[in-house]
Length: 291
Image 1 (tube, helix red, strand yellow):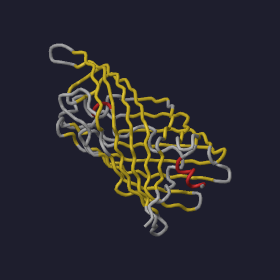
Image 2: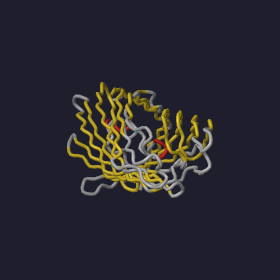
Image 3: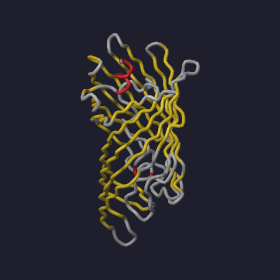
Image 4: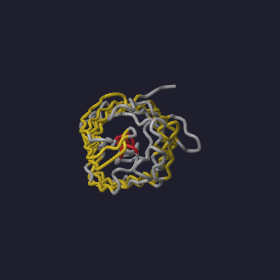
């Protein structure tokens, strides 16, 4: 069997979104294993070429919150920044079954985060400022199924996030969440090669297990990413990307000292991916499709 390597050394997606958050303190640490606007950019349901692929990309995150539970402790006036360097290893099988193509995936993050917050204590409040750099939670796709019918493309996969990242109950900053998440995702893409228009929807549903160290279980979560893109050539396109996030179950366990809150947020903004292999603005999957 011949193995073809589809290597992209650096891929950067620029997404500027305006977000509104209704319950910033929902979920342990006021955050989620769902990272807004990262579930695709262009042609999300179109399969990569058969063979082994490697993509390395960068994510930057900044957030402020009035209060959250971190490692079982109540913290207020949070200001956090995080950077993730993600290496993705993908293998797409050459053989199809009933017209469907299959893929396996592994994602390894190296992360950095810092936190400014106020720790609420029984006698007095304490100002804290901490940072950490380490391995984050590794995630993998045990199976991903692609199928298309004309201009319509479909992709069903399971995204599993494992608690492999650095975690210490005594730290205020942890790059791992210390619990498993199972995200079932179904992506749909409509791509018209004649007029260069593409529209994609990526709904997903996340089930979280309990953090045993804090007895905190973040409720189940629904997320939806939507993309509309216009190609002006095989190597240039611009798009509009939006997302919606809704926690459908409240937090639970003795560690959920703020109650069974449900987070909700949405955002919208422009999208333009940069492929360092060609130095042009080009969607990764579309470039291989057009080749």
